[in-house]
Amino acid sequence: MTTVDLPLLPLGRGHDASSERGVECPGDLPAASDPDLVARARAAKEALGERVFVLGHHYQRDEVIQFADVTGDSFKLARDAAARPEAEFIVFCGVHFMAESADILTSPEQKVILPDLAAGCSMADMARLGQVEDAWDAMTDAGVADSVVPVTYMNSSADIKAFCGRNGGVVCTSSNAEVALEWAFEQKPDAKVLFLPDQHLGRNTAVLKMGLSLDDCVVWNPHLPGGGLTGEQLRNARMILWKGHCSVHGRFSPDVVDELRANVPGIQILVHPECQHEVVLKADLVGSTEFIIKTIEAAAPGSSWAIGTELNLVKRLADQHPDKNISFLDRTVCYCSTMNRIDLPHFVWAMESLAAGMVVNQIQVDPETEEQAKVALQRMLDLPGKSHKD
Image (cartoon, rainbow, N blue to C red; front, side, top):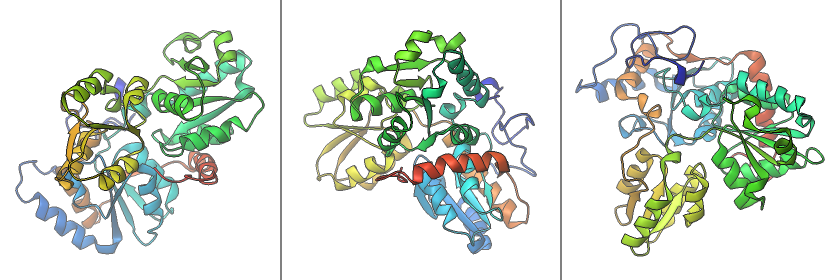
């Protein structure tokens, strides 16, 4: 079951034992209007001291990220947590798959906390283990599975990473997707790649970085029999792209790029590779979140930029670089709704609970899944070049 299938539960209220959706907060969740929330967060963090290590993803809202000990993308943060073995609690201000990765990489004694269990990821939800196993069975029936190497984007659940681990596959980030694909194609004669769960990152990397054609790519739709593909299409394909996407990066459109270029002389378009292929083709620069941040930091004063990534980060970059003209590559405001579920009331509730000796919202990956997921993660770490950067 994924968050797509579930009824909406009020923030912090209600509980569904069959899913990660919603969380029953013992006691009262602080009101969002409480003027003392910032002071309460600081007091709880001070009371916990070195026992707590707070991770803040780049897409978090400012009211939360101000309390982060480190900021970054998902895998960097998980590795940062692993490098702090003295921290009893890892409070991950991000989404569920990120907290899973932190739990996998940290020691058994450390406890990873997600302030709101409803902070999921729609992209990760688009590839469920049962669906992927059904696809693998269908590829076996079509006679192609022996040639397929699964590659999953970091933005996937622990059980999808584990699937890749036990089936000869690897995890990748947006920075090292090209290296991961090169590795995958070297694993078997006439190798094909099943790329999970983001079709856009897979397509953009295969076509723009590796020289494959769009005709070499097919899209597996888990909601159609046989993925909506014929046996011939599977046999002829080199990239089998899972029909998944980021709900934020998928919004950016090529017509907005054209409009901005017409209205803002010299503007540069900077986008994340999770964007649609048509948008990436029109961009000046394409790269991971860390790449986007570093590009803006190094940009000349007075330069103009339109950035295609999550709005919290774009706004933060604009505030940090007032000498540059930075705009959002969309006509409408669109935050990552699930990332935004980590708000100050949930953060305060989680921190005060820990300070009071009550462990809440602990993320725990079962030992078998953890072991298999580590295999795929280690294969990524063993890749040459940009093997562990986001």
